[in-house]
Length: 404
Image 1 (cartoon, rainbow, N blue to C red):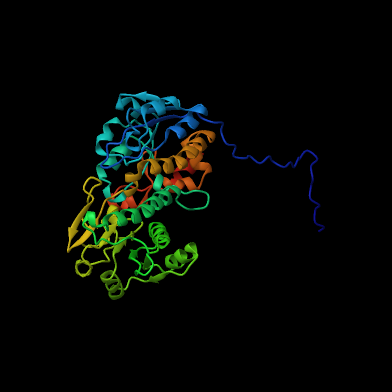
Image 2 (cartoon, helix red, strand yellow):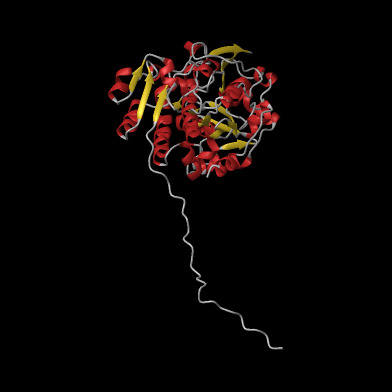
């Protein structure tokens, strides 16, 4: 039996379907609030008057609490001239849909937070409390930590800026406390003809360690760098463009170098959790009298066993005849420079948020920005925080995909 030929009906039409592209929405007008920080030793402000001026010129509303820029020597008049509204009511500032802070959310802020508010601020893992996170979840807050914010190159711009400020400040601080008038050893941090150079030991080859190393070398000091990450040590030498004495963290070698140095810098830290303690009290006791320890890692507990938290008002203490400088948040001591560095990242970010039609839209279009979001509409999207506080974790990618 012959096979039947297929029947082709002239009524069937085969047409190519149109591809539906994801079109970005039109720009959104932002209402931004900048409160005065009440956190311990926080002098920075998240947006400078110049940055506010750019935002206002682009049609956005900015409300600034009176004296918010005082710690960075920005006046209410400067903010007013930039187009911001100055408010004497903290409650009014917290009513803004977008809140931009230079310090983390603290317990006093919780009653003022609004439902569905967007908060852009730092996130200090070590100081965070469960009740703050729970209250923010309850109010369906979308929160972005700016130290976890990535740029298009995959780096963390605000962390890098703050680390550069801290690294640059270290040699200024060390030079100050080595002088005889500050009960230091009375040596000049540098190299003078015919006199052996000052010895500096840096524990940690990250950005802080790298910048501190560059400045110490520029002054003529003899620098030795320790880190357990060999790749970081190689990267430090490549970035400096010269060979530097480096070593992995071997206790005997570290103890030997500390015994003969004038300056010891602790810049070693974990991404999350407490900094590792790598210098014991016995090592510190063997150091030269009048030498100085600067523990930058004190923000995360410190990497010297003898370190104790100090303040900008009383920055040092002496233990085993060694000066200890253990002030957290060193960039806050150079608040105006730090504020400008934060502004340079946050102002373009806020303009992008507007151009994309709001925070929810930019999270969809900008993959790098997702790194900074730790809470989205009240859902905790940071795995480390969910583990630490035993709270429900929700994947941010699934959340935003479900809203499309």
